Length: 196
Ligand SMILES: CC(C)(COP(=O)(O)OP(=O)(O)OC[C@H]1O[C@@H](n2cnc3c(N)ncnc32)[C@H](O)[C@@H]1OP(=O)(O)O)[C@@H](O)C(=O)NCCC(=O)NCCS
Image 1 (cartoon, rainbow, N blue to C red):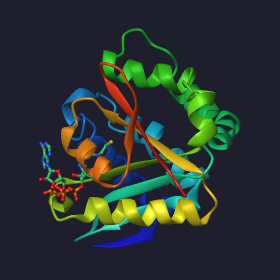
Image 2 (spheres, helix red, strand yellow):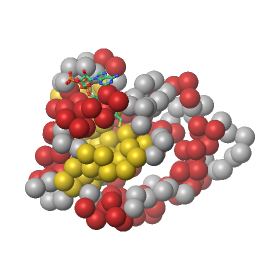
Image 3 (cartoon, rainbow, N blue to C red):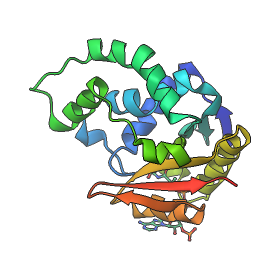
Image 4 (spheres, rainbow, N blue to C red):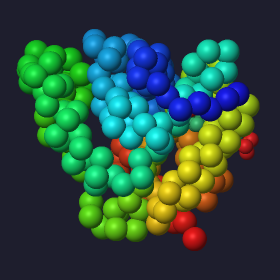
């Protein structure tokens, strides 16, 4: 397994990773009519606007990503000026869309930022997704250690992430990497880790 800085040309492959892990860690292909939407929301901003913390996982081809963001508030501002506008034009609100697509389109039009309370102590965040052939080899913890070191070296105070309440496997990995639960809803846990 090798981590390499993600390249813009890898966009389609990385968007596909988001899709095949998009149902709480399992294949989400059946959930969405538009196969690019998940990637547009959860991958594009990182590889295009935060490229120094965006890594592709290579394991017999592209097999995942680990995407870091040093300052969540700053990325949200940059998305507002140069990521969401084009997507809002490409994906107008259309009530006939399938509910799962519609939820992402609504997010594109009105992204929900994280609370100031959370960002004060945990300004960074990350996403990790590995396709099935790269799961179960311990690559997840290695990728997390790598991105956590990168964020800490860059001066971060702390990092948060969101994980589906149903994704027990990922939660176990995050706890083993020093993350604790910060908040919980029916759908999502927010987990945090402070840097020394
Ligand atoms: C979650 C993920 C990053 C973990 O990385 P990984 O390298 O596959 O991790 P591993 O399978 O080696 O280790 C996971 C641990 O969870 C355990 N585990 C596996 N399946 C589990 C399950 N269904 N419930 C609880 N624990 C589980 C493993 O036994 C292992 O524990 P151990 O180290 O004590 O043996 C990776 O599997 C992945 O990307 N999955 C799909 C997408 C995803 O869920 N991303 C996270 C979104 S927030």
